Image 1: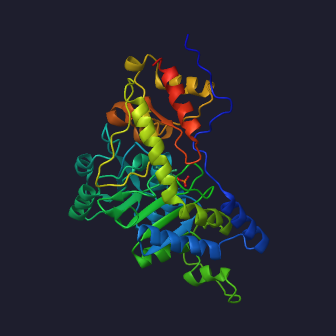
Image 2: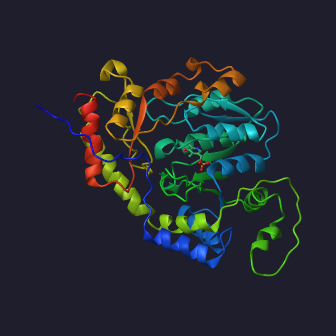
Length: 388
Ligand SMILES: *Cc1c(COP(=O)(O)O)cnc(C)c1O
């Protein structure tokens, strides 16, 4: 008889790997008394702009803040339309709304789960101002097609690269391609600062504006107020926000960024192991990465189809949870949530691919913190739940 023994301790989904150097650096910040925006934020920004090959990197307290400010500094006016896809986190769409613009959703492709360039082109109106691609799970969007559309219709491209810190599109690093790119260091992301985000750009004026809007709208010199050059008066030139990153956060980020390639390599190993172990199961596994791109391996998703698997996605998640494996759902599509349904009158069938994925997708643990034993626990538990 085949007796299945669940693992003993719960495997948390999206657990960050935090090592001694991060801990020591945070302690150093605490001991120095400099907790807020200071030299470590400056160092993290320099490291990050060098890593992605962008002229400017502005550290903020979240990717959501980065998206919000990116839309504001792009000069969107009320009623302007911004095209994105429902297969994303709600923050992408919420920030478009906060900037006073109208989110126009277009469906994703069913296999890649990425925004469909043809549908972008079909949705363009005289009010369209911007396109927001999401590199879902770490897979780069078709940026050649998106850039061609943007150039043809004079649109700005703002990338949601929350999953795509390491991603490269045809030799071009994500973060160096479009006018503005937003990254997340939320605790489940590929590198973390607890809460935190970064905007990259090659445009010095936009970089200055993001810094200023993110710190109360105080003029550029006010930013330097946090130095030891002596007291400086500040001048408010815009009713800004409080979105700056703290040195305590950057203290973690500096050491996380130094280990980014090592962590990606580990997630690549786990990914290959999953691909191999699930090949014979009646589940959908992620589309292979394109050889010309670097996939950031942020989320490993299974498609659980009730007709093929004998149980639906939610039952699968529940069984995994009972057997001590944490999982996630990325995502329940934006257009299915009550607020957007009511405000924009969306029906599930408006974006059939995103709705199809929403019902079936399940993300498995994929953290560099996982041991080989953890990986094997996930595999044998998935196989057990699917009666394989
Ligand atoms: C995590 C995430 C965000 C928001 O990032 P925060 O840093 O938590 O604000 C935005 N978009 C996508 C696709 C995300 O996964």
